[in-house]
Length: 122
Image (cartoon, rainbow, N blue to C red):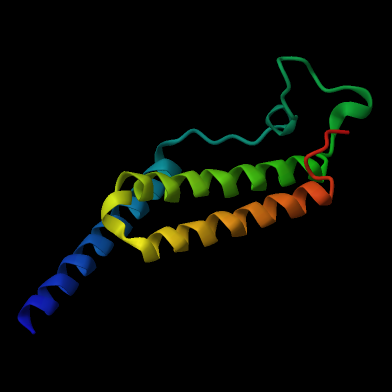
């Protein structure tokens, strides 16, 4: 029971220290950083040119967000696939079939995105 409590104390201590570090960084930033509100700071900045005409406020098409989400999905796949590939020999047959199922699910997601035309640049 004592070993279990020691583990919880270590996690609690790490959590408290982490929260204190984050809180102190936020407070120090608020106290030490120069803040000024002016009309010049509210203007959107683009390559040093002042915004003029219709391009003052541009909306980003939702297709960019879909590309970003697809990138994240397949980036996460790589994060899971690499350690599995490194330990492939020792993981056993069940882990192999679980990874096959994981890749099939991701492939199904890619096929769905392809069918919906998300990957076509228009």
